[in-house]
Image (cartoon, rainbow, N blue to C red; front, side, top):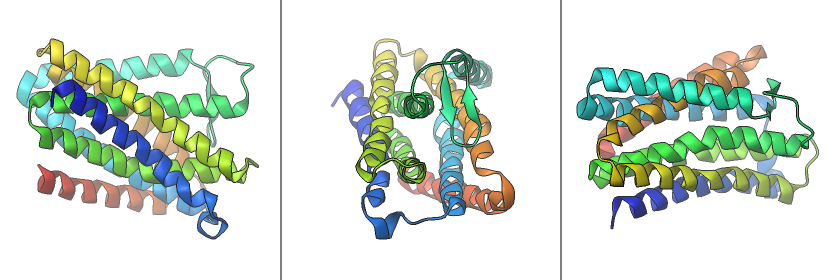
Length: 249
């Protein structure tokens, strides 16, 4: 199977994991979780993303392109996401409205925020298959899928908490993961036709993911008395993903 199809398949499965995480919201007995637990889930997801960024994207980017290409790519990825963050109206549950003012409904502003978050994840999955070693791509897709499960659960539970019906809360959580295959197609397509783009693509995806972790996920989970628990959840996610990266790699 070609790099492109591996990228599409891997990013699609990782994106569908978001919907998998939203399933508990359909059942009252499973969706009654605290705000603290939601923060811990997102902290765990941030740790998984951080480990995947370091071990599955940055290290290979340095190996294939050198440290200066990796550094430039990280900076470019972060700057591109920062630019999108400033130009596209979106909203976070804790941080509130960001970007220009908009007349869009709050739910669509929230969906846009998750979309900005998920696109670089799909890109990361797509470019990771460009090494020609399927296990590299599977590792990144697994990492993104693992972190998408608690993220999808947190999104669905948050929507339920502000008054959305269970079916809509699940649907919107599922919807936010559908952008990842688009990023996967772009990443896999670029490395398929331009092999020199591989280290650049990995580094750009890594920079974008680092921006999301630092600017969005950590601030969303570090407030009030739950901050310390979220920190340990992040460390746990990082450690588990580091272990999986070595076992799968």
